Amino acid sequence: MFLTSLNIKLENFEEECIKSIDSIFDAYFLLSKENIVLDYGIKDRLLNLYFGRESLQGKDFIKLSRNQTQQESFKGLIQKILEKKPQMFETNVKLNDQTSYYYVFIFMLADDQKLINFQNINKQEKMEQKLIESEEMYRNIFNSTPYAIWLVDLRGTILDCNETMNNFMSVFKHIDLIGKPFRDVLKMFLREGDPRFENLEKVLKERFKILLKQGYIKPIEFEISRADGKTFWITLESSFVNIGRERRIQTFIIQRES
Image (cartoon, rainbow, N blue to C red; front, side, top):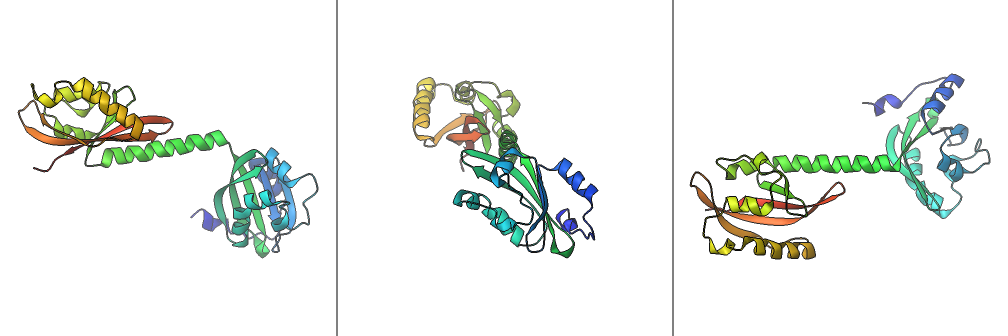
């Protein structure tokens, strides 16, 4: 809806309008139908270095790139301009060892003129946004899966688990497991005297070493017993997952078909 409103009919591009745009964006370029620069303003440091000190007025914007690196950097932008339609997208500009990220807005004006605006995106802000998006995506999957999931730190402490874990418990709830060591939670579900887990600490340490080396471990199967007396077999599957900047262990608890 926003982009469709960018086709603006203007008989004259007033000076006050230019001043307004100059105060909002880090750079703007007003191009003719033939992509000749009619007016422009650049406040961004890297864009100033990129386009140089010479006046750009009267020059073909499409041919402003002076070398191969610059041509590759602006290739996507040029393609968007040639499409002759209002658009909003992200791009980056590379010059030597420097890179900046930008939102680019293309407005279509009267007589097929184009107004191209650049808004700098701080690299750190961009990275932070990507981290937030990855965390939100993981959280959606985490809460909607039909399998119980534990999220464990590299010391073996359960940081989080989803509500599906409640299906495996009769007295406790999934939130009761958060903050507890992985091995202690497993002991809650084991039958007393089970020979396969008499030395649970040793088993888990050996599995953890394999996990660190390979990034995953083969599924572990065993029978668990709830406080209400119900027993069933489950499978544990563990692997590493990166959530934001943190590396975690993701364990799926799957009830085996009887």
